[in-house]
Length: 224
Image 1: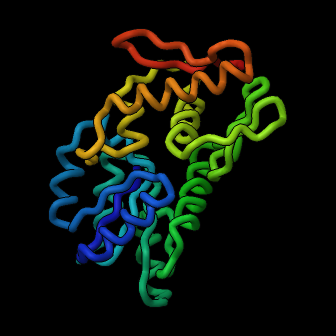
Image 2 (image 1 turned 90 degrees about the vertical axis):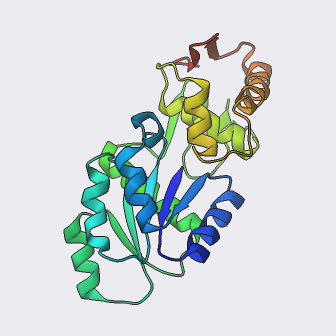
């Protein structure tokens, strides 16, 4: 999930709509609401945030430090006019990147991935035996062939791969894929997506690589 902070509701709603069209969950905040939210939100919910996008708001140089007190997710500032002084001030305040609007959401996602790779030494793709999973929007490859997946199933597979060897709950998957503010989708939809994903993987592999335990959640085998 991505979080957008901006004074203007038309900006936050515009970005959330465009991210949704890419199958990426997001949430928009006005500065006042964001300050309260980031100070009080539960750690498990905050862990679902992949990046913060900092738009036009008063005293925005104070926001990176505020975010860093609770999260290590990338912070990207979005400028509407070119200003070297403003850009330098934002980097000094602790943002990870500064971009010029208008910017396509796909470029934002690519920049988030690049920042995460630098911070976490995260590969652009991960190979687990016969499975190769990408983190740039491409479908995974299985036994050298592209495995075409709907966006939600692909995002779930990416999440399981990033957490391979660890058991993750249905709520954690839901928060990462749909966001913690989507009240229009039931959490049980995760079970449906995972069921379809498991069938496709089982059909190709001959076995189910996703281990599930009732009430405890799901875990992807370390090797496939």
